[in-house]
Length: 191
Image 1 (cartoon, rainbow, N blue to C red):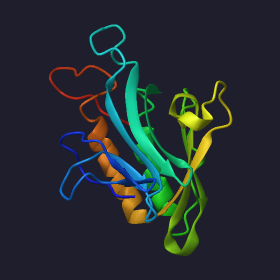
Image 2 (image 1 turned 90 degrees about the vertical axis):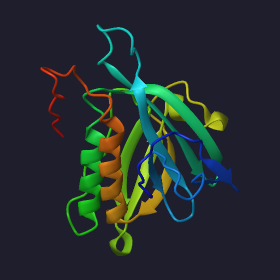
Image 3 (image 1 turned 90 degrees about the horizontal axis):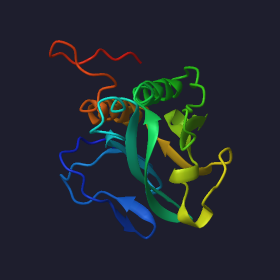
Image 4 (image 1 turned 180 degrees about the vertical axis):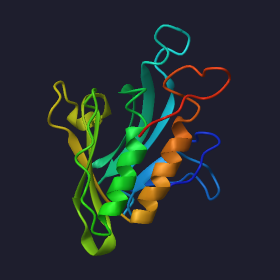
């Protein structure tokens, strides 16, 4: 996984079925990509209803891309409630601690079943992940009409990269708080 801050959102390139950063120094979203180029890139792009004050703080739009030996694809959907979104960073940090002998975190699931993450192993100081992509996030060649059997993308990465990913996710969601700011301050997040 490579976690680098983003200023704009250029599309990734797919080279021989693998996700590749657009160019050196180009800033992109959080990437859970292993050395083989397989994995998932995720980013929060805004609210599902940005112009409706009554619904604005209900759902975050999540977009991303995935690559695995079967192929690559992109996705976009209102997949996380605003109060679920901070759980991603917390889970990534817990997964990083698992490599040092800590207890692996429970599978990360959400109200919408589009995204899930689990630690499947800890080979030689690394962390093996399975990232479940269901319904709107599933690949076009295996579209799912019912939830519960997600398409799984595997990725093995370092604890350091998971920590960097957690910090990057927090930067990703900062512009999209889960409640309106009170008295000119941002709401406090709990993870």
